[in-house]
Image 1: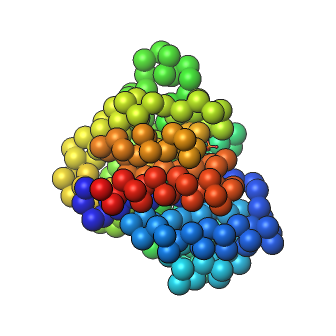
Image 2 (image 1 turned 135 degrees about the vertical axis):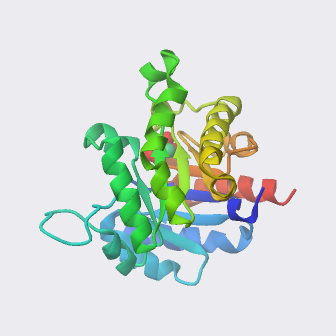
Length: 257
Ligand code: PEP
């Protein structure tokens, strides 16, 4: 594992903990950080709690991510938030192309790629999500779908020379308590890394590929032990500091070996 591929455990809070409760959760996560020196910790609160959580985490080895952005820097886009605004709020990261954005809000591959470009221009590190639906998996189209989603933003990340994380999140595993097995995850992660390597060896060796989809304390170790799994994007289990800490603890123990 290259130093750029330090384990990364990111919590996607979705539409939960948007106010004072978010700050309390951020504080609880920050208290875990000293015992997790080998792991990078990121939390993605709702927009309304970003600045307060970033303030709470300042200097405490927990960084903050937006859950989305609009690709424009500013303008007449009611209800939207731009990359420079996320920076102003104290974010260093942003989750993009989450399957809920793709499925519920109609985000197409090209729009996700615009967002990735905007994030990188502003100095945010994107965590770009890819993953197949259950129909696509049962139809044997997993690698085709993931590669189509990846190709849409591959040139953007190859040109940027900046760190990027990719999260492989099978849609059928998100919030369902069904996760890909370590071998299933590894197969897709290795295919993603091969794709990156087709662009440049440096891109393949610096890009962290996270697994996401019902990662819990009891399955984290096996998933994180897979060769090309560099961390996890955690939804439900990130809403409880002890569970999030146990997942990050599994990454810490593996990194200490
Ligand atoms: C997610 O939404 O990114 C996610 C992985 O959710 P969960 O862990 O709840 O499946």
